[in-house]
Image (tube, rainbow, N blue to C red):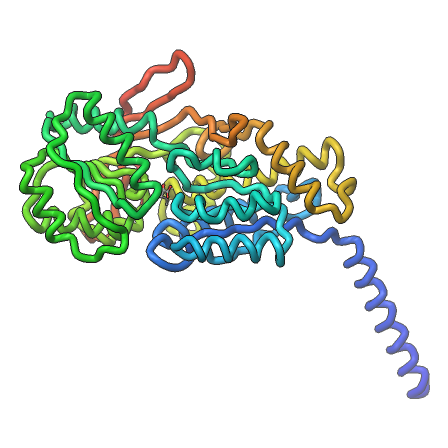
Length: 414
Ligand code: 1QQ
């Protein structure tokens, strides 16, 4: 063969390869984009980094199972930071530039009250992975949550404290600049009165506070034997630390802000003994929880807590709803009409039931989660003072006719 023939053959075969690749690529369906707008920076990243992990596990898990009838999902992450503007910006980028079908986020209720109305205007379904304040599902017809409020659990957590230590005199503390904390404290205060605790004082602070000496001595001046705190992880953990450093030896009951193992390095040995109500238990027996737990443990070298489990469940809700739409009317039938697809996704997700790591869940017409399994746990710190476990004290099944059962089982978190 002369050089010209070789060159021609080479060119021909290159053209053939390029042609084939193009054909293959044209047959490859474009992934379905789902937005994730959680706190990857600022103090709420104590929750947000765990949510990213849970969402990423869900993305890999459901794509491995074939995505949405053969079409993969692709998560698009946008840092919602820790304030309202961060969440609004993240939502806008995901909705208007990334053209996602729906959004998982934001991390804080305080952010949801500002950012969800933006999604409502555009008509984008939002699933709250961790917003537990009263009124969250009602912000918008496009907002649902997989994060149960602790409405029913506050009395159970406090009753557990009374049974454990016979406490009677309470001080309640909450972060007044945070929507979740000021909502949760109302539940704790009425539960405290309901079970006969004497609430000696209700004290306030702000999540941006960094010194808690005055607040802690005010609290201790009331001689409480139980202190009930509604705050976020960094401020709440620092407050616990200060209370113990000033000599407080009584019980501490924390709300949802205490539900992450990321609080352990903050209050360290002083985290030991905190009682907290939880919407997830990593030992819960179900096939999907066992798979989720194994994947999390494989990647993180520890067992999952509530925040990654709820984030996984949120992505699962989107994926299974998209599959349902494809099976019924067909995703193709929407063509380029993203607005119609988003509306169909919202209606569909409210109508289904899901078998998730946090149990079998569904939604009421407002988008409020219907969930039946809850837990009360107590922190047990390890000797390194950086890691610990949420040891299960009480397991609650709220299904009709089911009774609360006491199951002392240990659930290591890290
Ligand atoms: C809320 C909360 C926080 C503790 C979530 C991280 O429950 O803001 O609603």
